[in-house]
Amino acid sequence: MRRTLLIPLVLLTVFALLAGSCGDDGDGDSAPEPDDTTSTSADDSDTTTTADATTTEAPPITATTTTEALPTVTAADLAEIGPYPVGVTSRELPTGNLVEIWYPAGPDAEGQTDTYAVRDFTPEVMRALVPADIDDQVTVAAGRDASTAEDGPFPLVMFSHGSTSFRFQSTNLAHHLASWGLVVASADHPSRSLANFLERPEGGPSSADDVLAALELVTTDPELGPAIDADRVGLSGHSAGGGTTLAVAATGDFAGYVSYASGAFGDEPLPDMPSMFMAGAIDTIVEPSRTIDAFDEAPAPSWYLEFADSGHLAFSDLCAVGTGDATLIGLAEAAGLGDFLDDNIRRLGTDGCEEPNRPVTEIWPGVHQATTGFFRYVFGIDAEPVGLDASAVEGVTADSK
Image (cartoon, rainbow, N blue to C red; front, side, top):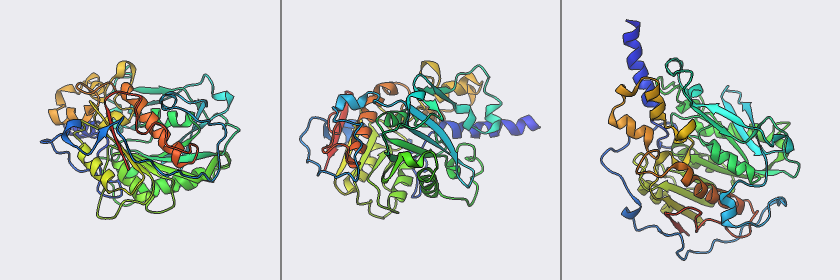
């Protein structure tokens, strides 16, 4: 009898695991059902132009301070790892959820690595079914609790993860930004975490509250605070995290925001600050038309980038788990759950991971380049935008205003 009850629970848990990060309805805490009948490719819309098209020149932004360690760079430079070693550390919010922080580090971070395992963010019943020898880890070159670089303070980027996901989901992106002299903080959102997906608990802080609490936490932290320039704060989020980003942006004076595979929510106008929107051309979870609509609505200056042959999870680590770019579907099959995965679950768990999608590691240089260039510009490090209208990867369409 106990096993009979366990199997449906496992199936729901696997669905939660494989659902990835869907869009939301306003504050980033609930995900709509994807539309199985439609998908949009890069050729379906005429609102984008090729990356080498003429675009409106963005106005200069004056920095409140400068970071002299970051010299003028080229677009190709920004696609590569930056000059700083990277440190990573964790902090706990009063509500108990954790915040992960990646930052420019001192020499003691050199040669170090930091690893997380996907299974650690699944419900216990799922963890119990995953064989110990299954590789579900992601590793980056970062020193756990390393010292901060001495030539700060550095600008801060707050990141919001997607639905049924976790704070580490875009570690490779956060690591890249930190290597270029930015601090990145990502809080777990219990309101839409993978572990809580089945129960949908009532009450508790919203995801926007998590971000604001994390902002207060890291900027006042005795060790990290002195390394952070609290006058230069930007926002970013993937899918449901894009909705959270918009909600947080409406609360204060931020330098700008980047939204990945997301759109606009509700009837409120988008925040009047610099913005960038990115989409995968064959995303079937949040179709690129939704992201284009948000870009069209956003005040200038704003940029839109669409990556050909790319799907929903291309902006996260979740298509490159373990060795050999294993997908979450592959991990579920290795755990003996493959027979329970229907076509819809497989689509949700592989959108962006398998053919006809390009390997995400081929997409990341373009995502990293544009994200780094955007934040360097809005933080006043670069007087003019670098790497926003011409991509390091092929198959990128771009528009700006």
